[in-house]
Amino acid sequence: MKRLVALLVLVASLVAPAAAMAHPLGNFTVNRYSRVQPSGDRVYVLYVLDMAEIPTFRERQKIDGKAEYADATAARIARRLELTVAGLRLPLVPIRRAIAFPPGAGGLQTMRLQVVLRSPRIEDEGPLDLRYRDTNFAGRIGWREVVVRPAGGVSIRSASVPRESISEELLAYPKDLLESPPDVSSAIARFVPGAGDGPAPVLLSEKELRSRVAVRATSDSGFAKLIAEENLSAGFILVSLLVALFWGAAHAFSPGHGKAIVAGYLVGTRGRPRDAFVLGLIVTVTHTAGVFALGGITLLLSEFIVPEQLYPWLNLVSALLVVGVGLAILRWRIRVWRRGEPLGGHHHEHGHAHGPGGHHHHHGPAEGRAGLLGVGISAGIIPCPTALVVLLAAISLQRVGYGLVLIVAFSIGLAAAVTSIGLIAVTARRAFSRMSFDGPVIRALPAVSAIAVLGLGLAMTLRALPALL
Image (cartoon, rainbow, N blue to C red; front, side, top):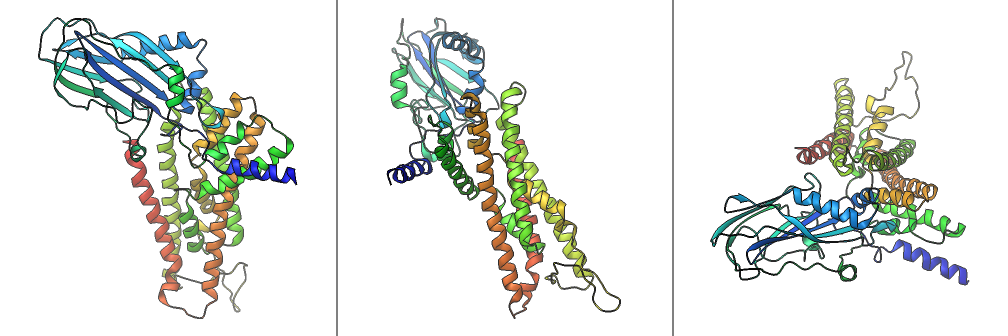
């Protein structure tokens, strides 16, 4: 009885995501913040770099010593900051830095680097025009914020950015902006310098940082927790596989993964139950292979390919596959209509001849392997970022075999949910076909489903294109 209670408590803790930590903006983000601080007769910049789990994992491979890495990164950041005062370019020199690695999802770490940079003394009295631009980490997704805050007797006449950070200097990201974070990398201000030395920005200690760092449970955090469990008994591994199946199925009901497309495809092509199971198998293989491929790119090719930049292309490939399948179904339906058969048609699951001359029912091209393959790949081609975190954590913790099994179980759960939706669609279509009514709406349902699949594919394409432009 005690073992059963302990097992139930374990399952509950793994299914509930509330205690899991993950970067609020997602596992791929590289977030940066600049506080431009005219103080006395100098300009200081407090630069904060906040990396999520996956870019941090990549950076950790380069680190021999924390201090040496922080110094080198601070120098690299300084070279890509542009500060001009009264039209004169002023160099920014790092004078202090602090680095910490707060815990993230799946036993991986995040990274927070703080750097204080200082300009030479300003001789002019002002008012002076100040321009600042940060060109670091161009093209990386994440939060970008700049503020201008005076100190040491400086007077700000005007500024293009606020004085206070809306994210508390990347410590507390506002929830209502997580889906559309600010993208501010430059600032313009007009100010009157102070006299003599002014105060420089103060860095948070590692202890203060750990007590304040923002954490948030994501929808898949319970899955990521599995890989970090210290005691891997046989019982825990068995339970963890069931939990991974659960999280995979739950993930399938988040936006995406072609649920409507699978249903529309199976209705539009008069699919059979076995088609739904074949789709599930294709989704499992595609999603698992996608996670492994993206993990390989992160480990081996990240100097040349930024992993998160592949997602827009994968979204486009998925959308074009759906468009192709929708066109194929629609073309077949039009051919059926031209032969004089009703659009709804009637379905035979076995080949046979009618009458002395006989005739055969030919399945359309989208009903064959190509159609199933296209829909299955489209539903599984986008790897879940949390699954990638689990893979990288497995490598980091030297639990590669366990990590691979978890990812396969997660993918099977994802596919099981998609298969269930397909089976419901097939069952519903068959139930309608057995009813006595034969109205035009029922007869046209497969053709309407074909148009719906095509429309969804076009909508997905339009949504994917802006990220590539």
